[in-house]
Image (tube, rainbow, N blue to C red; front, top):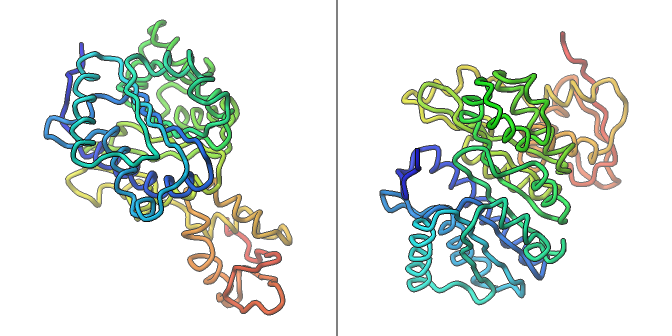
Length: 367
């Protein structure tokens, strides 16, 4: 069945766009001050507008550049390109009109430019990869938000990861994937082989956590992204619709994305649900505290550096900037007896974690 030209914006889409916008609001000032050339890619751009008139992801991204207060006050010397890819002619026409309307009302900053490209994400990026990446010298942020799961092979994500400082925010359409994974359709299984970069997903079919964890693992081992972060979208009855999966090699980029995720979900930073009863969201969500995770990892293992601890936290759903120091380590040091011992630089006061030489976690994890 052919998808409509435009469609209604559901609650998941609103949260997805909120996370995207918040990440770009923080990403743009950082990256435009650091690099001379940047590229934002919307791989499945759509028409740029929903049935109700709400802006689509291309307009949200362009507005993020137009309205960023820090960049309006002090424009960067960077050139930021927006590559907006859409396969369907009818959506391309509407998208171009939406952008014309936008720039007539609020012109783009002189340090930005955009191109609406007619074609598929896979073809446009893979065929002209050296051109778009400036032969691997231009960092890219890619928002990859397909209807299904074909056309985003792991091999292409791996090429993107070779470009230093590049990041991907990918809609892992679990509901669609699972629907076809259980049917044994060879053509669709071939698309899933491409998506994962391996046929080994087959042994995990029907197991949501296993299928998602394997995709995240492939983003690491197969694509080469050091950090992967999932954000789960659930429907009114609690079933998963999809996961927003973020992939980066930048600790700072991960911190910025986690901040956006924790804004969207202040309880766990991991999930959004449009259930009528908001308490339904937490019936099966009981994440371990960061304190428990730290003790499980480090208790009884001697002295470790703050860098060791921060890197461990990056691989959890917690943020090393938002949750680690005053939110977790400070209370642990104040416990009686303390569950962490901190060795600080001379002159540093107790309770401060800015100049820590090393730490030792003392309490043992209870069985």
